[in-house]
Length: 133
Image (cartoon, rainbow, N blue to C red; front, side, top):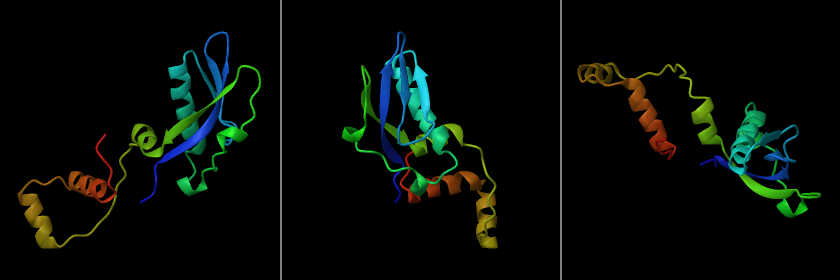
């Protein structure tokens, strides 16, 4: 089973109000927040935006936090990026899938008003060991 959780060191730079944040392992991954909580949420979203067109095996390898160079009042925090949570929030658009089942099973399911999409979603989540949101 593939992991959907990734951890990157992020550099937090205190400002007069809030924090600027950047992730050195992901070029261009820069954001800010007025509070620590907002900055943390924003950097998790920024990571998702920067990695959105990549598959997890194409994600950059995280640096060792002790190797990240900081200056002044900056500090390093490890930030979790949860690919599954990000996709549930931003990529939940339904996609049409074509599949085949035996005619007798189709007839029986229709007679019992089975929602095929719901059954398939539940079965896939069970097979992939994904819990409901």
